[in-house]
Amino acid sequence: MPCTTILVGKKASNDGSTMIARTDDGFFDVKKLVVVEPKKQPKKYKSVIGHLTVELPEEAMRYTALPNVDPKKEGIWAAAGINAANVGMTATETITSNPRVLAADPMVEYRKAEKRGEKDTPGGIGEEDLLVLVLPYIHSAREGVLRTASLLEKYGTYEMNGIGFNDEHEVWWMETIGGHHWMAKRVPDDACVIAPNQFGMDSFDLEDAFGKQEAHLCSADLREFIRDNHLDLNQNGVFNPRDIFGSHDDSDHIYNTPRAWFMGRYLTPYSHVWEGPDAEFTPESDNIPWCLVPDRKVTAEDVKYILSMHYQGTEYDPYAGKDTGKRGMYRSIGINRTGDTAICQIRSDVPDPLKGIEWVIFGSTTFAPALPVYANVPSMPKYLSEVAMEPSTENLYWASRTIAALTDANYHTSIQQIERWQNAVHTKGRQIIREYDQKMTESGDYTLTAEANEKICKMAKEQTTKTLGKVLHDASMHMKNGFNRADH
Picture 1 (spheres, rainbow, N blue to C red):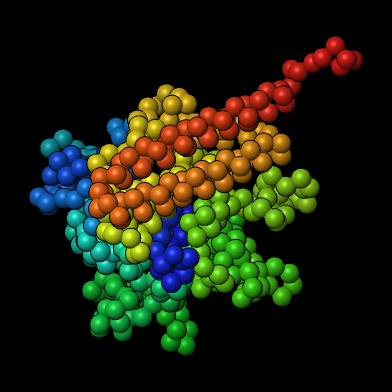
Picture 2 (picture 1 turned 45 degrees about the horizontal axis):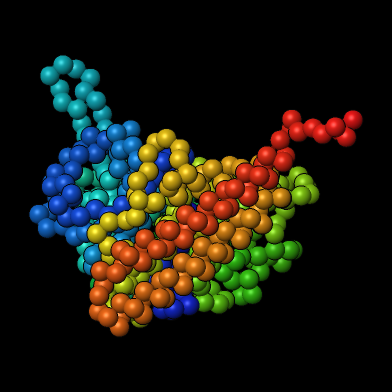
């Protein structure tokens, strides 16, 4: 599924937290934010796309998830969440590969029996499944990589996946290679990773992966896999996984690399040159770094802004007033068909029950705020969790989708209302989190997380309803059938 990911190490963030975030860019999938208690976690998992049955461990932890409202169509697609051990996971960023890799280790695809008496052949695991199969059972980001690796090696996958994990200390990024192989790398504490639907890692320490494994992990036979299948395209002994396992297609330069360019441009406007005749990187460069040390500390609002990108401030912006012939030529991050976006933030300066904050955005990120809620709760407020397939202003998902559609059609007159809505929700949401952080730390009553989330959602509903009224009025004023007696 087309998505965009950003990962933030603890020394790269403004408050010492780690963050993993991803837009879940489906096809207008209807989504909700829920809490899955251990008693609701299946012991035997059955996938819809892969037709695969997986036996799960007896002991599971509570976790948050952003599943499809209609799981019968294509499965759960739980997207992102934080578990009771304060470990976050986002799954998956669909990434690219090349024919050499896919021929050497084919995807594990479901095949229906062709003859009577034969059995169907199950497919592997994929985005539909991974969060449910992994997040309830891991106690650290590294454990997330290792559990996912064991599942990949046993069942295989039918797609290329990029998967992020974080705990309060570490952030890890994992990329699958073909049907069964994989590699993972610990994000440097002072850095951010940018991933736009491509195999991203551009460096990897094989000596560490096959030695101390301090910051690199991979398939046990990865060296042999590369050697035996003549996959190594690198020169002068430099090992660049992106050149070996990734793609450099013409379509990448329209769909993928421009997003990396904008993210890098935002994070390092001074330490790299992104524009002009002396630019180090252009929107169509294949060598945009996977990992960058930002020029200043990164906040949750920065992550949200990056994931709302439509090339604002450039000639590629589809909403630009002046068309130079390049308007809308590249794929935005804040795309119309996004179902949800989650920023999984794990903090280190508060007690354990308060560490996990999940910032949730529904619909196109360009036109919606990020709402912060505590992850350590028995259930989510109805405003986030009770979503049906039919549109309704009684939940944030459909209200956000409605506001986005109205604003897109009247961008230049309505966007100010969106900016005010976003600022109000971000500010008031942070105020409530600060209030309850202090209240719970002083009292030791951590059950107040549920009360805080209700207060946050009440605020969000008030702000959202107010904004909906304003953009609806603006859209009504611009209807083509408007007419006054003086209009002649």
